[in-house]
Image (cartoon, rainbow, N blue to C red):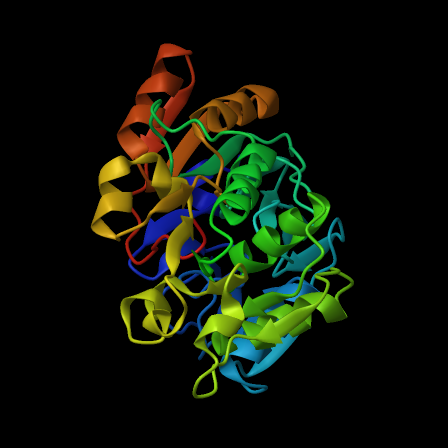
Length: 337
């Protein structure tokens, strides 16, 4: 009879399946990698073979070049595959474009590795689908009861209200290049904002990719300034990666109002440290209520917790009578928070 540790176990390279001889989201080059999504802490170049959704493979090509792996194989959502006799299926994770949970099954025993996920609707990617299993491996980036994300529409309304209140100021919104930036743009469009949105050059390639995948982002233009044009961005929304806001690029704009879209903006000290005047609590990860509700909905016999605040979620599972353990995998950051 197959046991959980026979099917998947944590190693220094990532989760390893000995029966299928593959890794899930390995942090070092390996012979065969199954990749949940395109963020750099999960999707790394240099593997001999990569299996991922078509969108994730295209994202990896955009980030790392055409030859980021020896061979690449597409896994359609819901498609039943086998790797060395181990059943594999990819299911939507709702994190970013192409993101997927990976189900691994052998002899009727099923483990689902969630990767990063969120539960709320997102116009830029497929919605998370619960997948019943024996063991559920869940992320816990926001795995503390203090993290309860507000309504997305309310956060976007704050940004639009600030535009009305300060029409002379350029509103600079920090957002990660993959997923968060496109989601902020899509949410602004859904709220009725039809003006041109200006983007940092680091976002263009991925915004173009999202458009090519059928995600409508509306009118976008490069956030470039010619000499003497500083006032041209008054009252405009400018989106760029958080790293750009720490250099002279951000100081080019007229009386810039610094904003940042992240689940971490729930922590006031983090906003203060970054010099954020308008924090927007917008996360691409599940919050505490969504994490616990997902576990309850899936109903696994056991939960493995990784990527974040593991202890609190393990304790919650124990109090619910669900066996749980922390995985303590290293090498995963919060690129898509």
